[in-house]
Image: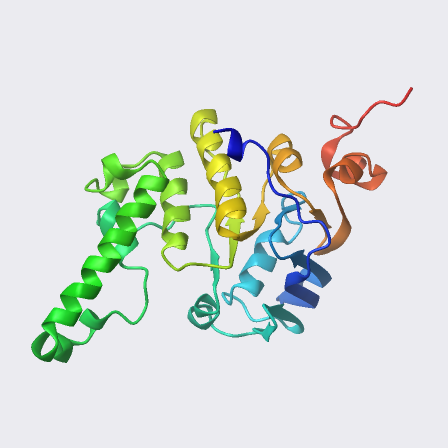
Length: 272
């Protein structure tokens, strides 16, 4: 347990993700306004701000659910601006959602086994002419899914329908599904929302362990400020669709603009 108590901070790592001057309008509303930031490789980066600041829209622009009106997104040296989400997924960028999108009528094991792309069994002729290869690949995928369920402490629920999970268990399942794709970067949208403290502690431990031991980079949106300040470095603050501030947690905690706009001073360190 001691190996996952504290996150691995980013230091001066090169950026894995670069967002440059993104703009997105919805009718007469500018949801994202000339937003630029980068995510260092190997970091757990936080993205905070009030409701309506544009955080989830930025996630959707990065992950291909929306096309930006202008600006660019570069991931691992590749220009992914405006690519559809399934192509971006293949570069090694995965995301979760604030409201989990599990396949409710499938078991946890089945939810995970659906994730890998290009499975041989998806083509009927492979079942006719290469059945051994199909079953071999399916066994490998099943073994990997069970390994991930075990890592997430969900093995005892592998045959349970996803619809029957608690909110926190669904968040764990969402994270487990991203791991089936061997991602380089995971975008986490409010992992603590609606999750009890025990399960949130488990999610936090898994994020740290995945970051430290598997080298996965995280960018997470979160309103739980103690979680962000204890887990993330750097922290990016958005307001009105653009970046307001960026830095290590101690700087963000004491930035007057952030304290006034988002934190209300409650996390400031008293002086004197």
